[in-house]
Image (spheres, rainbow, N blue to C red):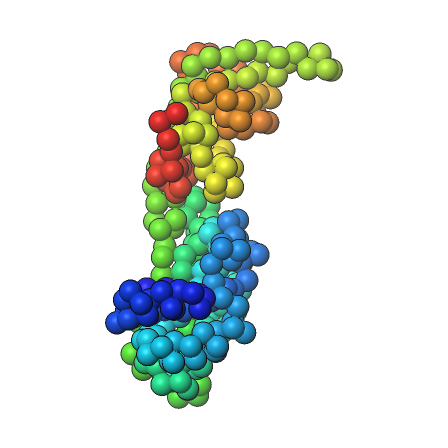
Length: 263
């Protein structure tokens, strides 16, 4: 069970004093697409005081967790976070806690084309754990029996789903320079699978199925609802489409259907 403040510790003491607790620390998540530090995690500088309070309350602290933000683009964020986690581990050991769990969170990219970045992140984590801060050999103080876990949900599911939508309506708009821009209305939108554009800061890339791609034209893509917020892409380039044509989006496995509504 994770905690990051004094109120939570007192609540655990009252309701579940035998819980195995993990202190969540706030780390640098500026290299991620979705930053989580505003909501969860204590400052590393406050960690010792929370551990002291846990000691006074007779609670059981077993480890540390962190999250560098979802869809991370910066491998060094993980190495810095592991370094700070080791500092908190040492505070816990000094206070007599059996520190045995390290949760390094998630945020690993899983889109097609991001394999190289994922490999860089994995190599950074491995080096930071095994060679620097949680080594199995002599050098830095060795902590035996530490279980390292992670939360690689996005990595597993992001590229596992491809979304096929159909054009249900269209209209052409004459712009100020007399050029034409087509509005295509699809059978899915931001209240459905494309909620990821709002909550996950995703930028799905469309392509037309069974249409020539050598005559691309400016267009915008919209969902099926009456809400003008239901816009999937304001500036897309697609060949001319007709009602019934298919528009395809790859990398639609993460944070899409799970947060959709029936509106």
